[in-house]
Image (cartoon, rainbow, N blue to C red; front, side, top):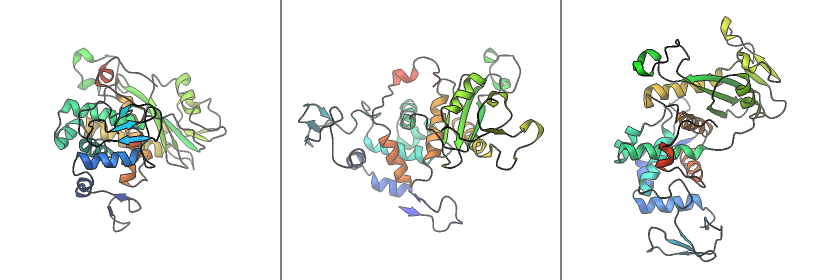
Length: 320
């Protein structure tokens, strides 16, 4: 693995990245990838995903489930009980996909995964959404001070087909609101799609992410006015910073996500927008780790989760 030679060079000099030749050498084939996944998932030795017993029989010739638990007598593989369960993709493909998504700071479109991995675009789209699930965790609580803000995602009304226009004005019309909180002490972000930007929505959203007594910095939007320990700047009159009071750090996060929206994905449907928000949140929160540790964390985040293609394509948007 390579380290940036100078702190003045591009990228982060305090963390180790990985080049494409290095990642290919690490995962030259499915067998090597499987060994790496096993070591990553079970660093202390293989345990049964059904009963957690470590009394395991390994029969290499018994594919695709080479492990048998002597306690519950069930067979399993490194995919069992994870987002990779039931996938026909090789583990080398999965490993390379994790790497591509982890390092694509502005997002990695399914068309790119389709071309880079040699799989269909439909498969790539499903694969990318399953990887985004690795970052699905409970909302953290921040000690503060924190910045709270909201933004909107969606296409311009004038660019939509006439049948899809709401004909109710411009600006936020037809767009989906997203709320977020950023902790200044840790630099971590917690963001999610919300049904609206009213007080009854935004105030609980912020409060459940704060430890008692945490200072909150917002803009003048009235939905934040009853938050305890709140200070605000007045964007409406051109005030962006008042000493320590500003939301510039969180707005930088929105800016990066919107560059991904326009430059990589071009469209994020309301139905799946929260998955994209989770992707940018998760990648942001692990940005201080070395690349290989980012990928390890994502792999561990696959445990106990499933996302079938049927579930992915069913129903409408679900707000957290």
